[in-house]
Length: 317
Image (cartoon, rainbow, N blue to C red; front, side, top):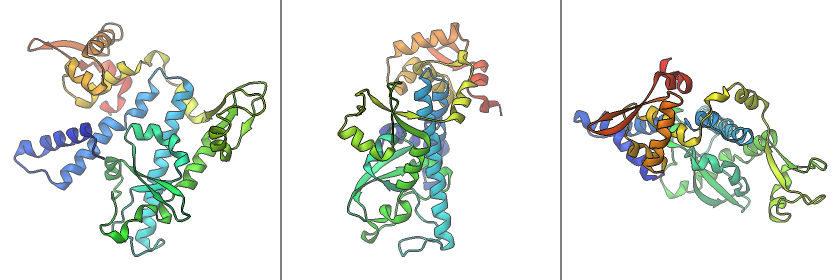
C-alpha cells in the first residue's frame, strides 16, 4: 500500500536474497520479502500486546482483533474454494486462481478495524457504492499475509471488473456484525444503572446521544468480552510485562537478528536514541534481557538467551 518504510524493508530483503548474489529482483523474491516482513515486523504486534503493560481491557480488545483477522482469512479461503469448485460462479471469477484479498462493509464498522489498519494488517482501499446505493468501505488484507495463505491479491484487469471488490461474496458486514455481537457489549458505566444497549443502536448512541445513557446520563462504553483471552492473559508472568518502548527494543533486535545501534532502533520506534539508550540500560542491568557492547567505538545491542527464552520461545523450537 505504498508505505515507504515497508517498501524499504522489502527492497532490502530482495537485495539480501537476489542482488547480493548477482541475481535480479523477480516477482517471487518480492512475494517472499513481503511475507517475511509480515511475519517479522507486523504479526508480532499481538505477542507484543500480550507482554505489554496495557490494561486488561485494552489487551482483550486488541487480542480479539487477532480472532477477527483470522476470520477474514478463513472467509477468503472459503470464497476461493467455492469459486474453484464452482459453488460460486460469475464471469468475473478466475476459477483456477481467483483474486481473494479485498472485502467491503459499512463505514460504521471502521472504528473497530482501526487498530488492525494502523498496524498494517488491513488497509483501506476506497469507498464505493454498494448494490443498495449505500456507501461501502473497501479494505484489503496485508499482501504478505495473502502470500502466506496463498490468496491472490488484487482484482482482474479491465473496466468490466471495476466493481469486483463489492461483489456479493466479499460482503463482510454479516461477519463483522457477528464478531461484534459475540465479543463486545455496550453498557452504561454507572453500576447502579448498567443498562445494556444492542449493537444496532451504536450509531444512534454515538451521533445523537453522544454516548450518554438516556436513563442516568452517565457515559456509555463499548466493552470487550472474552473469557478465553482473559484466561490466556492471566497465565502470563506479571514480572515479564514491559512498557511499549522496552518491548519495542527487544522486538527490533529479534527482527534484525544482528547487532543494532541505538539510533537504528530509535528510527524504527520513532523516538530519540537517548530514550533507547536509557531503556536499554534498564533492560541490561535490571532485567538481563540484552547485552550492551561496543563496535568500532559505537554502542550496540543484542538479545540475551534469557530474552529469547522469555519472549521469543519459538527461536529455539
